[in-house]
Length: 92
Image (tube, rainbow, N blue to C red; front, side, top):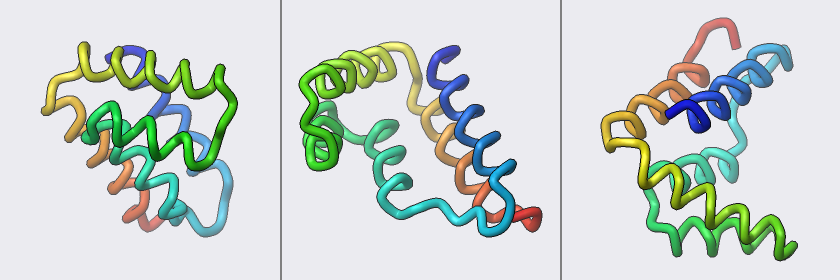
């Protein structure tokens, strides 16, 4: 969970330091949901809608496979719950 945890913490830090409205863009929230809970094909197709760079698409597949093979469903649920807590924070 080191890589995925680091990515989520970085995202959280960026949201918290951005000031003002911490509402997460629906497209990003959908991306995170599919990254954690979607199938590799669903996530791949979602990213492909926004980026058609072959290097990014290839890395997307590798990262999704890594997350699916290392994180448990409980880990994924905790990561998504963390994002929802950020959004619900009164500091936002």
